[in-house]
Length: 429
Ligand code: F3S
Image 1: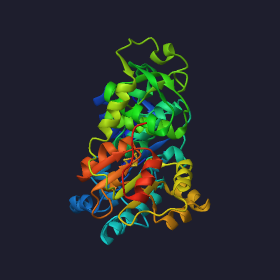
Image 2: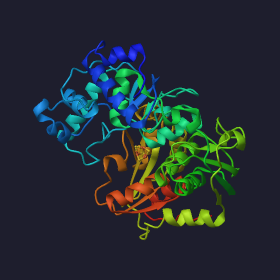
Image 3: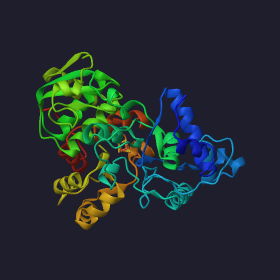
Image 4: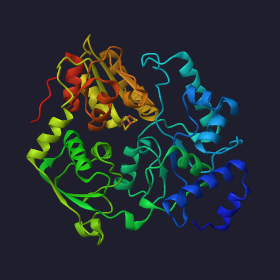
């Protein structure tokens, strides 16, 4: 049984009201299932608290069919419906299901949009920051090294653990909603030093120096080490926030990587010894020219027609630097009459993009800058899409399979070229 502090015991006994009590009950069950001995305090939680499509509300019709019902019965797994107060922890809402101004282009109904607006008003009224992004670290929530967080969203979790040195497991909707109320999460997994040690080595023998290459290396790494912790060393260079973002998202998609070390690069890996931290070293995987080509071919195995009708950029959500680059590449050009270009980012980054003039460049080119979601999450692609081009290994892993379309993986420049020409002309150089 998990040990409780006096404060935690009081929350469980109802001192802070019924919702906090239900949250603690859920967290105690969760901690016991994990075998956690105690809780850590967290004041940084990212989830999707209480948000749901209309059909979920209808499922809870007998309980009132509203935000309160969904939060109580679904998020807190409570037998009864309770009043939901403002959250106690610093809480953020991750990505959602549609763009707030371009939902019609995404094929959403008025009813779905009205439901989306209602949920968002509830989220804000409960003291939750409306970040609406899979990249909270680009939109105002940057943890510090060692900070205990409770985050959902695999690409954000792997970034938090690996690049920042924050500490979070890949939480679920229920545990994050409960943590928002109780400021607690089980002291298990990545919260503990002993679970943050490297398990396998990935030796990189070919130059990995661009977003495109970092994405491919991530995809290879996840496939090799699955859900363990890789330690990478070798010819990795030109690190940047964006490259880590693409590497981690790809590794979390092809495997279940939630943390990685890069020797001399990430904060908990000043040396190979430190990265493994005395733990037994598993296998060594080599990433050389053959492996690189095989990854490229795998990522492009679901493309056959070179007639591209959809280009999606922004998985994970684009940073302002990537938006600037996309604007540079498309300025003065036009999206082909047979194609659409949708670029996804957070509301915060979009505001900066608009202020910086990039919104005008995209509009002049016929491209759309969208927020809150992406094609995989919203399952929204332009009507009639058959062949997509993507600059994200994660998105090419998911979108074609989900939507029954073909997909190509390439550089941002190749994707923008495809949007403007309607043709895929990408290749491995
Ligand atoms: Fe984000 Fe969608 Fe990719 S929510 S990580 S852009 S699958």
